[in-house]
Structures are given as structure tokens and as C-alpha cells.
Image 1 (cartoon, rainbow, N blue to C red):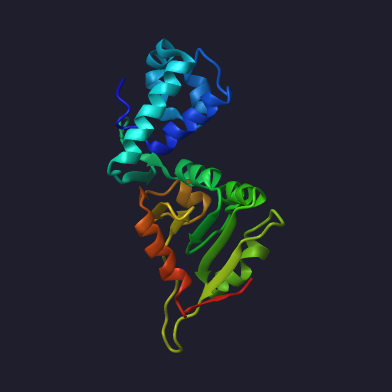
Image 2 (cartoon, rainbow, N blue to C red):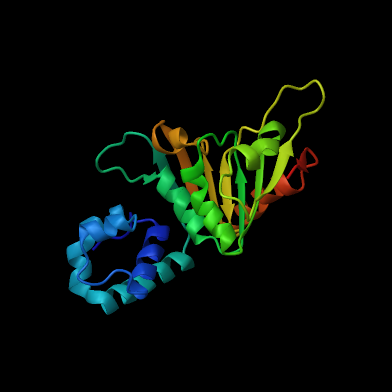
Length: 228
């Protein structure tokens, strides 16, 4: 069994659903797909041969090895792709990050139109006690809770970017930092189109140093002010 091409998030998710018996053995392709674990459907026979306990031991071993070694960036993609692509789906990665969050989330984006499906997992994270800071251009940030957050409380903190007088500029970055550990930088807007239809490219990394540096770019910038 070769798990080298399977994302760490997917292995952690498999461990969670197997460990809690949310997925029972024998596993099926359909059950794995239902948990967003499409990349593991080709390993069903091998996992079933190991059984529940053997699978958990294998996952513990692989995850421990990955934590001990350098982690490779993971390619994240929206749009048509080759059948055997090694990229992960943008919408799946974003939802997984929000589901995984335990303490903090930073979101920076250009637009959030028609984003209820995209942001639903983030609202669920806030309901678990996770805090969120959202950054956007000032007009977008000011209207965010009214126009793009249909869920009600709890709410993210909204911070707006205002350029210097006479300068035409906007916040065009799209990125997510979760638990000061996971960093997702993408060309995709936080919209249904950006997450599911356009051709978009991003990268997912587990890097606490990069996470801290990226968060500081937003939190220490005088060009941002809280608007909600």
C-alpha cells in the first residue's frame, strides 16, 4: 500500500472516522467518498485486509513519520484535471481546514459572493469556540456580515483594508491560516464559482513559521482597521 500521495489531512480524517467507528469495517469505496476521502478509495482492499486495528496502527505510524520529517507542500486545484492528478480539490481542502480548526482561523479574501456553502463549515467552527479574523477591502469587510454571512452568531471579526488617499488598490490576496499551523494560499475567491468551477491553483502547507509570519502581515498592518 502506497500512501505517499495521500494528503496528511486525509489520513488524519481517516484515522478519526475509523477510530470513532463512524466508519465500520469492511470499508467500501462509497463510504470513503461520503467522508470526502476519494483519494483513498483505491486502497479499500488493502485497508480491509489490515482490519480496523491494523489500519489504526498503520495510520499512527505514517502520521508519526510525517510529523518527524519535512512536509511537502500540497497542490490544490479547482477545475478540470487529469484522471490521475495528484492535486487536491479546493472546496474539499477549505472545508477540511475549517472542520479541523480548534482555536483560530484567519481568512483573507477579495470577494465572498454566494458563499454560504463555502463558509458554512467556518460557522460550524465558530460554534465550537474557534475564533476567526476576516480581512478584506474595507467596503467588502463592512458589508460582509450583512451580505455574506447568513448564519447569525457567532460572528468573525471583520477587518477592512483602506489604501492611502489617492491610491487605487484593494486586498486581492486569498489565504487561510488555521491554528497557527496550516497555511492555504490560493488564487480562488471564496465563492461557489472560485471553489468549484473556475481553474484555480493553490498550495497547502503545514508550517508554523510561515503561519506566524503570514498572520503578522495582517495583524500588525496599520492599513487594516476593524469594521465589525
